[in-house]
Amino acid sequence: MNEPTAIKPVILVIDDEPDNFDVVEAMLTGQGYILHYVASGQAALDCLDTLQPDLLLLDVMMPGIDGIEVCRQIKALPQWRGVGIIMVTALSSKQELSQCLAVGANDFISKPINQVELVARVRSLLRIHQQYQQLADFNTQLEALVQQRTAQLRALIDEDALTQLPSRTRLLQAISLALQSAEACREKIQVSPKGLPSSVGLAYLDCDQFQLVNGAFGYAVGNELLKAIAQRLQQLLRPGDVLARVGGDEFCFLLHYLDYPATLESWNQAIFESFAKPFRVANCDFFVSVCIGVALADATTTQPEALLQAADTAMYRAKRQGKGSYQVFDAQLTTATQRRLALETDLQRALEHREFITYYQPIVRLATCQVVGFEALIRWQHPERQLVSPAEFIPCMEETGLVVPVGLVVLQQACEQLKIWQQQGAADWTVSVNLSVRQFDSPTLLADIDQVLATTGINPVYLKLEVTESALMQDTESAIAVMEQLRSRQIQISLDDFGTGYSSLGYLHRLPIDTLKIDRSFVQQIHTGNRNHQVINTIIALSSQLSLPVIAEGIETSEQLHCLQSLGCEFGQGYLFGKPQPASEIFL
Ligand code: C2E
Ligand code: MG
Ligand code: MG
Image (cartoon, rainbow, N blue to C red):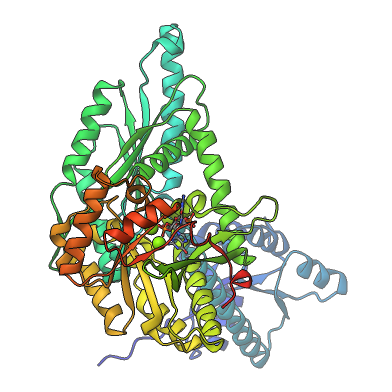
Protein backbone atom coordinates (compact mmCIF):
# COMPACT_ATOMS: atom_id res chain seq x y z
CA MET A 1 0.00 0.00 0.00
CA ASN A 2 1.33 3.45 -0.87
CA GLU A 3 1.67 5.97 1.97
CA PRO A 4 -0.17 9.14 1.05
CA THR A 5 2.50 11.66 0.03
CA ALA A 6 2.57 14.62 2.42
CA ILE A 7 1.84 17.88 0.64
CA LYS A 8 4.90 20.13 0.75
CA PRO A 9 4.31 23.72 1.93
CA VAL A 10 4.86 26.35 -0.76
CA ILE A 11 6.94 29.43 0.10
CA LEU A 12 7.10 32.49 -2.13
CA VAL A 13 10.15 34.72 -1.77
CA ILE A 14 9.73 38.33 -2.99
CA ASP A 15 12.93 40.33 -3.26
CA ASP A 16 14.33 42.66 -5.89
CA GLU A 17 17.80 41.13 -5.29
CA PRO A 18 18.02 37.59 -6.80
CA ASP A 19 21.09 36.92 -4.64
CA ASN A 20 18.99 37.23 -1.54
CA PHE A 21 16.73 34.45 -2.84
CA ASP A 22 19.81 32.23 -3.37
CA VAL A 23 20.73 32.75 0.28
CA VAL A 24 17.22 31.87 1.51
CA GLU A 25 17.05 28.87 -0.79
CA ALA A 26 20.35 27.57 0.53
CA MET A 27 19.26 28.02 4.13
CA LEU A 28 15.94 26.19 3.63
CA THR A 29 17.28 23.33 1.56
CA GLY A 30 16.28 19.94 2.89
CA GLN A 31 13.41 21.33 5.00
CA GLY A 32 10.79 19.89 2.63
CA TYR A 33 9.48 23.16 1.14
CA ILE A 34 8.76 24.20 -2.41
CA LEU A 35 10.30 27.61 -3.02
CA HIS A 36 9.27 30.16 -5.67
CA TYR A 37 10.83 33.48 -6.38
CA VAL A 38 9.56 36.76 -7.83
CA ALA A 39 11.48 40.02 -8.06
CA SER A 40 8.75 42.60 -7.51
CA GLY A 41 5.63 43.33 -5.48
CA GLN A 42 3.46 43.48 -8.57
CA ALA A 43 4.75 40.08 -9.76
CA ALA A 44 3.89 38.66 -6.34
CA LEU A 45 0.33 39.98 -6.51
CA ASP A 46 -0.06 38.58 -10.03
CA CYS A 47 1.11 35.05 -9.26
CA LEU A 48 -0.62 34.41 -5.91
CA ASP A 49 -3.59 32.52 -7.35
CA THR A 50 -1.37 30.38 -9.58
CA LEU A 51 1.25 29.48 -7.00
CA GLN A 52 -1.09 29.18 -3.99
CA PRO A 53 1.70 29.86 -1.44
CA ASP A 54 1.35 28.93 2.21
CA LEU A 55 3.91 31.51 3.31
CA LEU A 56 5.49 34.71 1.92
CA LEU A 57 8.98 36.01 2.65
CA LEU A 58 8.53 39.63 1.66
CA ASP A 59 11.33 42.16 1.29
CA VAL A 60 10.35 45.57 2.61
CA MET A 61 12.54 47.82 0.48
CA MET A 62 11.73 47.28 -3.18
CA PRO A 63 11.43 49.59 -6.18
CA GLY A 64 7.84 50.01 -7.45
CA ILE A 65 5.36 48.82 -4.86
CA ASP A 66 7.26 48.37 -1.63
CA GLY A 67 6.82 45.40 0.74
CA ILE A 68 4.54 47.22 3.16
CA GLU A 69 2.08 48.15 0.40
CA VAL A 70 2.22 44.60 -1.04
CA CYS A 71 1.44 43.19 2.39
CA ARG A 72 -1.48 45.61 2.82
CA GLN A 73 -2.94 44.69 -0.57
CA ILE A 74 -2.62 40.94 0.00
CA LYS A 75 -4.20 41.06 3.45
CA ALA A 76 -7.07 43.06 1.95
CA LEU A 77 -8.00 40.11 -0.29
CA PRO A 78 -10.45 37.86 1.59
CA GLN A 79 -9.05 34.62 0.16
CA TRP A 80 -5.48 35.58 1.16
CA ARG A 81 -6.14 37.10 4.53
CA GLY A 82 -4.99 33.92 6.26
CA VAL A 83 -1.65 33.52 4.48
CA GLY A 84 1.44 33.97 6.67
CA ILE A 85 3.74 36.87 5.73
CA ILE A 86 7.22 37.33 7.14
CA MET A 87 8.67 40.74 6.36
CA VAL A 88 12.39 40.70 5.58
CA THR A 89 14.13 43.97 6.31
CA ALA A 90 17.58 45.49 6.73
CA LEU A 91 16.11 48.36 8.73
CA SER A 92 14.83 47.76 12.14
CA SER A 93 13.45 51.05 13.39
CA LYS A 94 10.53 50.64 15.73
CA GLN A 95 8.40 52.83 13.48
CA GLU A 96 9.06 50.61 10.46
CA LEU A 97 8.29 47.41 12.36
CA SER A 98 5.05 48.77 13.72
CA GLN A 99 4.11 49.81 10.18
CA CYS A 100 4.60 46.19 9.09
CA LEU A 101 2.36 44.90 11.86
CA ALA A 102 -0.26 47.55 11.13
CA VAL A 103 -0.71 46.32 7.56
CA GLY A 104 -1.13 42.72 8.71
CA ALA A 105 2.33 41.14 8.57
CA ASN A 106 2.61 38.11 10.84
CA ASP A 107 6.30 38.28 11.64
CA PHE A 108 9.56 39.87 10.55
CA ILE A 109 13.16 38.89 10.23
CA SER A 110 16.14 41.17 9.84
CA LYS A 111 18.92 41.10 7.27
CA PRO A 112 21.47 39.67 7.24
CA ILE A 113 19.40 36.58 7.75
CA ASN A 114 20.37 34.12 10.43
CA GLN A 115 19.63 30.52 9.33
CA VAL A 116 18.48 29.22 12.71
CA GLU A 117 16.12 32.15 13.09
CA LEU A 118 14.75 31.79 9.55
CA VAL A 119 14.10 28.05 9.89
CA ALA A 120 12.37 28.55 13.25
CA ARG A 121 10.18 31.43 12.14
CA VAL A 122 9.19 29.75 8.88
CA ARG A 123 8.28 26.55 10.67
CA SER A 124 6.21 28.22 13.35
CA LEU A 125 4.31 30.42 10.90
CA LEU A 126 3.59 27.46 8.63
CA ARG A 127 2.16 25.58 11.58
CA ILE A 128 -0.11 28.50 12.43
CA HIS A 129 -1.13 28.75 8.78
CA GLN A 130 -1.95 25.05 8.70
CA GLN A 131 -4.18 25.38 11.78
CA TYR A 132 -5.83 28.42 10.26
CA GLN A 133 -6.49 26.40 7.10
CA GLN A 134 -8.02 23.51 9.09
CA LEU A 135 -10.26 25.90 10.91
CA ALA A 136 -11.36 27.47 7.65
CA ASP A 137 -12.09 24.01 6.15
CA PHE A 138 -14.05 23.05 9.24
CA ASN A 139 -16.05 26.24 8.97
CA THR A 140 -16.84 25.56 5.33
CA GLN A 141 -18.03 22.04 6.15
CA LEU A 142 -20.15 23.32 9.01
CA GLU A 143 -21.71 25.95 6.82
CA ALA A 144 -22.53 23.34 4.14
CA LEU A 145 -24.10 21.14 6.81
CA VAL A 146 -26.20 23.99 8.15
CA GLN A 147 -27.35 24.84 4.65
CA GLN A 148 -28.24 21.22 3.93
CA ARG A 149 -30.17 20.92 7.20
CA THR A 150 -31.98 24.19 6.54
CA ALA A 151 -33.01 22.88 3.12
CA GLN A 152 -34.24 19.64 4.72
CA LEU A 153 -36.24 21.55 7.31
CA ARG A 154 -37.72 23.78 4.65
CA ALA A 155 -38.70 20.66 2.69
CA LEU A 156 -40.29 19.25 5.86
CA ILE A 157 -42.36 22.38 6.26
CA ASP A 158 -43.43 22.24 2.62
CA GLU A 159 -43.89 18.53 2.27
CA ASP A 160 -45.47 15.83 4.37
CA ALA A 161 -42.72 13.31 5.15
CA LEU A 162 -44.98 10.25 5.12
CA THR A 163 -46.86 10.72 1.85
CA GLN A 164 -44.61 13.26 0.11
CA LEU A 165 -47.72 15.32 -0.52
CA PRO A 166 -47.65 19.10 -0.05
CA SER A 167 -48.06 20.15 3.56
CA ARG A 168 -50.59 22.51 5.09
CA THR A 169 -48.10 25.39 4.63
CA ARG A 170 -47.75 24.74 0.90
CA LEU A 171 -51.49 24.30 0.57
CA LEU A 172 -52.09 27.70 2.14
CA GLN A 173 -49.61 29.24 -0.32
CA ALA A 174 -51.41 27.55 -3.21
CA ILE A 175 -54.81 28.75 -1.96
CA SER A 176 -53.43 32.26 -1.68
CA LEU A 177 -52.27 32.19 -5.32
CA ALA A 178 -55.58 30.71 -6.47
CA LEU A 179 -57.53 33.44 -4.66
CA GLN A 180 -55.34 36.13 -6.21
CA SER A 181 -55.82 34.84 -9.73
CA ALA A 182 -59.58 34.45 -9.19
CA GLU A 183 -59.66 38.08 -8.06
CA ALA A 184 -57.66 39.20 -11.11
CA CYS A 185 -60.03 37.24 -13.32
CA ARG A 186 -63.06 38.92 -11.73
CA GLU A 187 -61.57 42.37 -12.30
CA LYS A 188 -60.93 41.57 -15.94
CA ILE A 189 -64.44 40.33 -16.63
CA GLN A 190 -65.95 43.12 -14.51
CA VAL A 191 -69.12 41.37 -13.55
CA SER A 192 -70.72 41.15 -10.17
CA PRO A 193 -68.84 38.54 -8.12
CA LYS A 194 -72.06 36.97 -6.94
CA GLY A 195 -73.01 36.34 -10.59
CA LEU A 196 -69.99 34.22 -11.28
CA PRO A 197 -69.83 30.53 -10.55
CA SER A 198 -67.17 29.86 -7.94
CA SER A 199 -63.90 28.89 -9.53
CA VAL A 200 -61.91 27.99 -6.41
CA GLY A 201 -63.05 25.38 -3.97
CA LEU A 202 -61.46 23.49 -1.15
CA ALA A 203 -62.48 19.95 -0.23
CA TYR A 204 -61.50 18.67 3.21
CA LEU A 205 -61.44 14.88 3.58
CA ASP A 206 -61.27 13.07 6.89
CA CYS A 207 -61.08 9.29 7.20
CA ASP A 208 -63.75 7.79 9.44
CA GLN A 209 -62.60 6.13 12.64
CA PHE A 210 -58.99 5.93 11.54
CA GLN A 211 -57.86 5.78 15.15
CA LEU A 212 -59.34 2.28 15.31
CA VAL A 213 -56.80 1.13 12.71
CA ASN A 214 -53.95 2.60 14.73
CA GLY A 215 -55.40 1.14 17.92
CA ALA A 216 -55.91 -2.37 16.58
CA PHE A 217 -53.01 -2.74 14.12
CA GLY A 218 -50.42 -0.25 15.36
CA TYR A 219 -49.02 2.92 13.86
CA ALA A 220 -46.81 1.19 11.27
CA VAL A 221 -49.87 -0.33 9.56
CA GLY A 222 -51.77 2.93 10.02
CA ASN A 223 -48.98 4.78 8.22
CA GLU A 224 -48.94 2.29 5.35
CA LEU A 225 -52.67 2.67 5.00
CA LEU A 226 -52.35 6.47 4.89
CA LYS A 227 -49.76 6.16 2.12
CA ALA A 228 -52.08 3.89 0.16
CA ILE A 229 -54.94 6.36 0.61
CA ALA A 230 -52.70 9.23 -0.53
CA GLN A 231 -51.73 7.29 -3.66
CA ARG A 232 -55.32 6.56 -4.53
CA LEU A 233 -56.33 10.18 -4.00
CA GLN A 234 -53.49 11.34 -6.22
CA GLN A 235 -55.06 9.46 -9.09
CA LEU A 236 -58.08 11.72 -8.75
CA LEU A 237 -56.09 14.93 -9.12
CA ARG A 238 -57.27 17.04 -12.01
CA PRO A 239 -54.66 19.14 -13.85
CA GLY A 240 -53.78 22.22 -11.83
CA ASP A 241 -55.43 21.02 -8.63
CA VAL A 242 -53.43 20.45 -5.46
CA LEU A 243 -53.70 17.55 -3.01
CA ALA A 244 -52.20 18.09 0.44
CA ARG A 245 -52.06 16.17 3.69
CA VAL A 246 -53.13 18.57 6.41
CA GLY A 247 -53.37 16.34 9.46
CA GLY A 248 -53.16 12.73 10.66
CA ASP A 249 -55.89 11.27 8.48
CA GLU A 250 -56.94 14.52 6.82
CA PHE A 251 -56.38 15.49 3.21
CA CYS A 252 -57.33 18.58 1.23
CA PHE A 253 -57.98 19.12 -2.45
CA LEU A 254 -57.65 22.63 -3.83
CA LEU A 255 -60.01 22.59 -6.79
CA HIS A 256 -59.76 25.08 -9.66
CA TYR A 257 -62.40 25.96 -12.23
CA LEU A 258 -65.08 24.46 -10.11
CA ASP A 259 -68.62 25.21 -11.09
CA TYR A 260 -71.10 24.40 -8.44
CA PRO A 261 -72.99 22.13 -8.21
CA ALA A 262 -72.38 20.26 -11.48
CA THR A 263 -68.60 19.63 -11.36
CA LEU A 264 -68.53 19.38 -7.60
CA GLU A 265 -71.22 16.70 -7.50
CA SER A 266 -69.44 14.48 -10.01
CA TRP A 267 -66.08 15.11 -8.34
CA ASN A 268 -67.50 14.06 -4.96
CA GLN A 269 -69.02 11.02 -6.53
CA ALA A 270 -65.62 9.99 -7.91
CA ILE A 271 -64.00 10.38 -4.50
CA PHE A 272 -66.62 8.26 -2.72
CA GLU A 273 -66.43 5.60 -5.45
CA SER A 274 -62.66 5.44 -5.12
CA PHE A 275 -63.13 4.37 -1.51
CA ALA A 276 -65.48 1.54 -2.42
CA LYS A 277 -62.56 -0.81 -3.07
CA PRO A 278 -60.54 -1.94 -0.04
CA PHE A 279 -56.93 -0.92 0.58
CA ARG A 280 -54.53 -3.84 0.77
CA VAL A 281 -52.00 -3.24 3.51
CA ALA A 282 -50.00 -5.75 5.58
CA ASN A 283 -51.86 -8.61 3.90
CA CYS A 284 -55.22 -7.31 5.08
CA ASP A 285 -58.01 -5.59 3.23
CA PHE A 286 -59.04 -2.32 4.86
CA PHE A 287 -62.32 -0.68 3.99
CA VAL A 288 -62.03 3.01 4.65
CA SER A 289 -64.72 5.65 4.33
CA VAL A 290 -64.33 9.40 4.35
CA CYS A 291 -66.36 12.46 5.14
CA ILE A 292 -65.95 15.47 2.88
CA GLY A 293 -66.49 19.14 3.64
CA VAL A 294 -66.35 21.63 0.80
CA ALA A 295 -65.96 25.41 0.92
CA LEU A 296 -66.32 27.60 -2.15
CA ALA A 297 -64.45 30.88 -2.37
CA ASP A 298 -66.29 34.06 -3.32
CA ALA A 299 -65.26 37.69 -3.63
CA THR A 300 -65.25 38.08 0.13
CA THR A 301 -62.75 35.26 0.61
CA THR A 302 -59.33 36.86 0.81
CA GLN A 303 -57.55 34.84 3.46
CA PRO A 304 -56.48 31.27 2.62
CA GLU A 305 -56.88 30.30 6.28
CA ALA A 306 -60.53 31.35 6.15
CA LEU A 307 -61.24 29.01 3.24
CA LEU A 308 -59.45 26.17 5.01
CA GLN A 309 -61.39 26.84 8.20
CA ALA A 310 -64.69 26.90 6.29
CA ALA A 311 -63.94 23.57 4.61
CA ASP A 312 -62.94 22.11 7.97
CA THR A 313 -66.21 23.30 9.50
CA ALA A 314 -68.21 21.71 6.68
CA MET A 315 -66.27 18.47 7.11
CA TYR A 316 -67.00 18.53 10.83
CA ARG A 317 -70.67 18.90 10.05
CA ALA A 318 -70.48 16.01 7.59
CA LYS A 319 -68.89 13.86 10.32
CA ARG A 320 -71.88 14.45 12.53
CA GLN A 321 -74.14 13.07 9.83
CA GLY A 322 -72.24 9.81 9.94
CA LYS A 323 -69.69 7.89 7.93
CA GLY A 324 -69.30 8.69 4.24
CA SER A 325 -71.14 12.02 4.43
CA TYR A 326 -70.62 15.22 2.55
CA GLN A 327 -71.42 18.88 3.30
CA VAL A 328 -70.91 22.20 1.57
CA PHE A 329 -70.10 25.07 3.88
CA ASP A 330 -72.67 27.71 4.62
CA ALA A 331 -72.23 30.52 7.11
CA GLN A 332 -74.81 29.13 9.55
CA LEU A 333 -72.53 26.18 10.11
CA THR A 334 -70.09 28.44 11.87
CA THR A 335 -72.30 29.38 14.79
CA ALA A 336 -73.36 25.76 15.28
CA THR A 337 -69.74 24.65 15.15
CA GLN A 338 -68.62 27.36 17.53
CA ARG A 339 -71.29 26.35 20.00
CA ARG A 340 -70.24 22.79 19.61
CA LEU A 341 -66.55 23.57 20.09
CA ALA A 342 -67.41 25.52 23.22
CA LEU A 343 -69.28 22.47 24.55
CA GLU A 344 -66.29 20.26 23.81
CA THR A 345 -63.93 22.51 25.73
CA ASP A 346 -66.44 22.82 28.53
CA LEU A 347 -66.74 19.04 28.82
CA GLN A 348 -62.99 18.59 28.86
CA ARG A 349 -62.79 21.11 31.69
CA ALA A 350 -65.66 19.39 33.48
CA LEU A 351 -63.73 16.11 33.44
CA GLU A 352 -60.65 17.81 34.88
CA HIS A 353 -62.73 19.55 37.57
CA ARG A 354 -64.61 16.36 38.47
CA GLU A 355 -67.99 17.87 37.67
CA PHE A 356 -69.52 14.55 36.58
CA ILE A 357 -71.51 12.79 39.24
CA THR A 358 -73.53 9.62 39.24
CA TYR A 359 -77.23 9.34 40.00
CA TYR A 360 -78.96 6.05 40.71
CA GLN A 361 -82.40 4.89 39.62
CA PRO A 362 -83.95 1.81 41.23
CA ILE A 363 -84.76 -1.32 39.27
CA VAL A 364 -87.53 -3.37 40.92
CA ARG A 365 -89.01 -6.87 40.76
CA LEU A 366 -92.48 -6.11 39.39
CA ALA A 367 -94.28 -8.88 41.27
CA THR A 368 -93.26 -7.49 44.66
CA CYS A 369 -92.01 -3.97 43.80
CA GLN A 370 -88.85 -4.82 45.72
CA VAL A 371 -85.59 -3.09 44.72
CA VAL A 372 -83.10 -5.47 43.10
CA GLY A 373 -80.54 -2.95 41.95
CA PHE A 374 -79.86 0.46 40.45
CA GLU A 375 -78.92 1.93 37.13
CA ALA A 376 -76.07 4.41 37.31
CA LEU A 377 -76.86 7.53 35.27
CA ILE A 378 -74.42 10.33 34.71
CA ARG A 379 -75.19 13.96 35.53
CA TRP A 380 -73.14 17.07 34.93
CA GLN A 381 -72.93 19.40 37.89
CA HIS A 382 -72.29 22.51 35.77
CA PRO A 383 -70.90 25.42 37.80
CA GLU A 384 -73.34 27.94 36.26
CA ARG A 385 -76.26 25.82 35.11
CA GLN A 386 -78.59 23.38 36.77
CA LEU A 387 -77.85 19.70 36.60
CA VAL A 388 -77.28 18.92 32.90
CA SER A 389 -78.82 15.73 31.52
CA PRO A 390 -76.78 13.23 29.52
CA ALA A 391 -78.91 13.65 26.40
CA GLU A 392 -77.29 17.07 26.01
CA PHE A 393 -73.68 16.01 26.21
CA ILE A 394 -73.31 12.25 25.64
CA PRO A 395 -73.52 12.56 21.81
CA CYS A 396 -70.75 15.16 21.83
CA MET A 397 -68.62 13.03 24.15
CA GLU A 398 -69.22 10.06 21.87
CA GLU A 399 -67.85 11.95 18.90
CA THR A 400 -64.82 13.34 20.64
CA GLY A 401 -64.05 10.13 22.48
CA LEU A 402 -64.34 11.88 25.84
CA VAL A 403 -66.98 9.34 26.76
CA VAL A 404 -64.20 6.80 27.33
CA PRO A 405 -62.52 8.54 30.30
CA VAL A 406 -65.84 9.94 31.58
CA GLY A 407 -67.53 6.53 31.33
CA LEU A 408 -64.70 5.14 33.38
CA VAL A 409 -65.36 7.72 36.09
CA VAL A 410 -69.02 6.59 36.24
CA LEU A 411 -67.99 2.93 36.38
CA GLN A 412 -65.56 3.64 39.19
CA GLN A 413 -68.11 5.68 41.18
CA ALA A 414 -70.85 3.06 40.67
CA CYS A 415 -68.64 0.19 41.79
CA GLU A 416 -67.49 2.13 44.83
CA GLN A 417 -71.14 2.84 45.69
CA LEU A 418 -72.10 -0.80 45.25
CA LYS A 419 -69.33 -1.75 47.65
CA ILE A 420 -70.76 0.67 50.24
CA TRP A 421 -74.31 -0.68 49.82
CA GLN A 422 -73.08 -4.23 50.17
CA GLN A 423 -71.20 -3.32 53.33
CA GLN A 424 -74.43 -1.77 54.62
CA GLY A 425 -76.26 -5.07 54.08
CA ALA A 426 -77.79 -4.93 50.59
CA ALA A 427 -75.98 -8.08 49.61
CA ASP A 428 -77.89 -8.85 46.39
CA TRP A 429 -78.25 -5.43 44.80
CA THR A 430 -76.79 -5.05 41.33
CA VAL A 431 -75.52 -1.89 39.73
CA SER A 432 -76.00 -1.30 36.00
CA VAL A 433 -73.61 0.98 34.13
CA ASN A 434 -74.17 2.23 30.57
CA LEU A 435 -71.45 1.54 28.03
CA SER A 436 -71.38 3.71 24.92
CA VAL A 437 -70.43 2.54 21.44
CA ARG A 438 -67.18 4.37 21.73
CA GLN A 439 -66.30 2.70 25.02
CA PHE A 440 -67.21 -0.62 23.53
CA ASP A 441 -64.72 -0.04 20.72
CA SER A 442 -62.02 1.19 23.05
CA PRO A 443 -58.96 -1.07 23.02
CA THR A 444 -58.45 -0.43 26.74
CA LEU A 445 -62.02 -1.35 27.78
CA LEU A 446 -61.22 -4.72 29.37
CA ALA A 447 -58.09 -3.49 31.10
CA ASP A 448 -59.99 -0.45 32.42
CA ILE A 449 -62.77 -2.65 33.81
CA ASP A 450 -60.27 -5.06 35.38
CA GLN A 451 -58.60 -2.11 37.03
CA VAL A 452 -61.89 -0.87 38.51
CA LEU A 453 -62.79 -4.36 39.74
CA ALA A 454 -59.38 -4.70 41.32
CA THR A 455 -59.40 -1.31 43.05
CA THR A 456 -62.96 -1.55 44.38
CA GLY A 457 -62.82 -5.26 45.13
CA ILE A 458 -66.52 -5.82 44.23
CA ASN A 459 -67.83 -9.18 43.14
CA PRO A 460 -68.31 -8.85 39.33
CA VAL A 461 -71.50 -10.94 39.52
CA TYR A 462 -73.28 -7.82 40.79
CA LEU A 463 -72.07 -5.58 37.98
CA LYS A 464 -74.19 -5.19 34.86
CA LEU A 465 -73.11 -3.37 31.75
CA GLU A 466 -75.80 -1.90 29.49
CA VAL A 467 -75.08 -1.83 25.78
CA THR A 468 -77.36 -0.64 23.02
CA GLU A 469 -78.10 -2.48 19.81
CA SER A 470 -76.30 0.16 17.77
CA ALA A 471 -73.07 -0.64 19.65
CA LEU A 472 -73.43 -4.26 18.63
CA MET A 473 -74.47 -3.68 15.07
CA GLN A 474 -71.37 -1.85 13.87
CA ASP A 475 -69.23 -4.93 14.07
CA THR A 476 -71.29 -7.74 15.56
CA GLU A 477 -68.53 -10.36 15.58
CA SER A 478 -66.01 -8.31 17.51
CA ALA A 479 -68.79 -6.99 19.78
CA ILE A 480 -69.71 -10.58 20.63
CA ALA A 481 -66.05 -11.33 21.36
CA VAL A 482 -65.87 -8.38 23.78
CA MET A 483 -69.12 -9.44 25.45
CA GLU A 484 -67.82 -12.94 25.92
CA GLN A 485 -64.69 -11.54 27.50
CA LEU A 486 -66.89 -9.57 29.91
CA ARG A 487 -68.99 -12.59 30.75
CA SER A 488 -65.92 -14.70 31.36
CA ARG A 489 -65.30 -12.23 34.19
CA GLN A 490 -68.85 -13.01 35.40
CA ILE A 491 -70.04 -9.50 34.54
CA GLN A 492 -73.64 -9.45 33.28
CA ILE A 493 -74.76 -7.75 30.11
CA SER A 494 -78.05 -5.98 29.43
CA LEU A 495 -79.27 -5.07 26.00
CA ASP A 496 -80.51 -1.50 26.49
CA ASP A 497 -83.29 0.42 24.70
CA PHE A 498 -84.49 -2.73 22.95
CA GLY A 499 -86.98 -1.86 20.26
CA THR A 500 -85.44 1.42 19.17
CA GLY A 501 -82.60 0.10 17.07
CA TYR A 502 -82.48 -2.80 14.68
CA SER A 503 -84.70 -4.78 16.99
CA SER A 504 -84.41 -8.12 15.40
CA LEU A 505 -85.77 -10.76 17.71
CA GLY A 506 -84.17 -13.23 15.33
CA TYR A 507 -80.60 -12.56 16.37
CA LEU A 508 -81.25 -12.34 20.12
CA HIS A 509 -80.24 -15.96 20.65
CA ARG A 510 -76.84 -15.25 19.11
CA LEU A 511 -75.97 -12.51 21.57
CA PRO A 512 -74.25 -13.37 24.85
CA ILE A 513 -76.59 -11.24 26.99
CA ASP A 514 -78.23 -11.74 30.38
CA THR A 515 -81.07 -9.21 30.39
CA LEU A 516 -83.21 -7.34 27.91
CA LYS A 517 -84.40 -3.79 28.60
CA ILE A 518 -87.52 -2.81 26.69
CA ASP A 519 -87.37 0.83 25.66
CA ARG A 520 -89.67 3.22 27.46
CA SER A 521 -91.33 4.34 24.20
CA PHE A 522 -93.17 0.96 24.17
CA VAL A 523 -93.97 1.01 27.83
CA GLN A 524 -95.39 4.51 27.83
CA GLN A 525 -98.07 3.75 25.27
CA ILE A 526 -99.07 0.36 26.53
CA HIS A 527 -102.81 -0.27 26.84
CA THR A 528 -104.44 -3.65 27.00
CA GLY A 529 -104.95 -4.96 23.49
CA ASN A 530 -103.07 -2.23 21.60
CA ARG A 531 -100.08 -2.81 19.32
CA ASN A 532 -97.46 -1.99 21.96
CA HIS A 533 -99.14 -4.44 24.26
CA GLN A 534 -98.77 -7.15 21.62
CA VAL A 535 -95.14 -6.22 20.88
CA ILE A 536 -94.20 -6.38 24.54
CA ASN A 537 -96.09 -9.63 24.87
CA THR A 538 -94.10 -11.13 21.98
CA ILE A 539 -90.78 -9.87 23.35
CA ILE A 540 -91.51 -11.32 26.78
CA ALA A 541 -92.63 -14.66 25.34
CA LEU A 542 -89.52 -15.00 23.21
CA SER A 543 -87.23 -13.86 26.01
CA SER A 544 -88.65 -16.42 28.38
CA GLN A 545 -87.91 -19.14 25.82
CA LEU A 546 -84.32 -17.86 25.73
CA SER A 547 -84.37 -17.59 29.57
CA LEU A 548 -83.68 -13.89 29.25
CA PRO A 549 -85.17 -11.79 32.06
CA VAL A 550 -86.83 -8.57 30.80
CA ILE A 551 -86.69 -5.13 32.39
CA ALA A 552 -89.35 -2.63 31.27
CA GLU A 553 -88.01 0.94 31.23
CA GLY A 554 -89.94 4.14 31.90
CA ILE A 555 -92.85 2.90 33.99
CA GLU A 556 -94.67 6.01 35.17
CA THR A 557 -98.23 4.88 36.04
CA SER A 558 -99.82 2.06 37.97
CA GLU A 559 -101.79 1.17 34.83
CA GLN A 560 -98.54 0.52 32.98
CA LEU A 561 -97.33 -1.48 35.98
CA HIS A 562 -100.43 -3.68 36.05
CA CYS A 563 -100.27 -4.27 32.32
CA LEU A 564 -96.64 -5.38 32.55
CA GLN A 565 -97.34 -7.53 35.61
CA SER A 566 -100.13 -9.31 33.75
CA LEU A 567 -97.78 -9.96 30.81
CA GLY A 568 -95.34 -11.59 33.21
CA CYS A 569 -92.62 -8.97 32.82
CA GLU A 570 -90.13 -9.70 35.59
CA PHE A 571 -88.43 -6.36 36.26
CA GLY A 572 -89.13 -2.68 35.79
CA GLN A 573 -87.68 0.78 36.18
CA GLY A 574 -89.35 4.18 36.04
CA TYR A 575 -90.49 7.29 37.85
CA LEU A 576 -93.28 5.28 39.48
CA PHE A 577 -90.63 3.57 41.63
CA GLY A 578 -88.13 6.36 41.82
CA LYS A 579 -86.36 8.99 39.78
CA PRO A 580 -82.58 8.94 39.39
CA GLN A 581 -81.12 10.47 42.55
CA PRO A 582 -77.78 10.87 44.27
CA ALA A 583 -76.61 7.98 46.45
CA SER A 584 -76.91 10.19 49.54
CA GLU A 585 -80.72 10.08 49.13
CA ILE A 586 -81.00 6.33 48.83
CA PHE A 587 -81.65 4.47 52.07
CA LEU A 588 -81.71 0.76 52.62
P1 C2E B 1 -80.85 4.79 29.32
O1 C2E B 1 -79.66 3.99 29.60
O2 C2E B 1 -81.93 4.16 28.55
O3 C2E B 1 -81.37 5.30 30.72
C1 C2E B 1 -82.69 5.46 31.04
C2 C2E B 1 -83.13 6.85 30.85
O4 C2E B 1 -84.53 6.93 31.01
C3 C2E B 1 -82.55 7.79 31.90
O5 C2E B 1 -82.39 9.06 31.31
C4 C2E B 1 -83.65 7.85 32.93
O6 C2E B 1 -83.62 9.00 33.72
C5 C2E B 1 -84.86 7.84 32.02
N1 C2E B 1 -86.04 7.34 32.73
C6 C2E B 1 -86.11 6.38 33.64
N2 C2E B 1 -87.38 6.20 34.04
C7 C2E B 1 -88.14 7.07 33.36
C8 C2E B 1 -89.54 7.36 33.32
O7 C2E B 1 -90.34 6.78 34.00
N3 C2E B 1 -89.96 8.33 32.47
C9 C2E B 1 -89.08 9.01 31.68
N4 C2E B 1 -89.54 9.94 30.88
N5 C2E B 1 -87.74 8.76 31.69
C10 C2E B 1 -87.30 7.80 32.52
P2 C2E B 1 -81.11 9.89 31.49
O8 C2E B 1 -80.53 9.70 32.83
O9 C2E B 1 -81.38 11.25 31.01
O10 C2E B 1 -80.11 9.18 30.49
C11 C2E B 1 -80.35 9.19 29.14
C12 C2E B 1 -79.42 8.29 28.44
O11 C2E B 1 -78.08 8.76 28.51
C13 C2E B 1 -79.37 6.89 29.02
O12 C2E B 1 -80.44 6.14 28.54
C14 C2E B 1 -78.05 6.40 28.48
O13 C2E B 1 -78.18 5.96 27.17
C15 C2E B 1 -77.24 7.65 28.51
N6 C2E B 1 -76.40 7.66 29.70
C16 C2E B 1 -76.70 8.03 30.96
N7 C2E B 1 -75.64 7.86 31.77
C17 C2E B 1 -74.67 7.34 31.01
C18 C2E B 1 -73.32 6.94 31.25
O14 C2E B 1 -72.81 6.97 32.37
N8 C2E B 1 -72.60 6.47 30.20
C19 C2E B 1 -73.15 6.38 28.96
N9 C2E B 1 -72.39 5.92 27.99
N10 C2E B 1 -74.39 6.74 28.70
C20 C2E B 1 -75.15 7.22 29.71
MG1 MG C 1 -79.28 2.32 30.29
MG1 MG D 1 -82.45 2.50 28.19
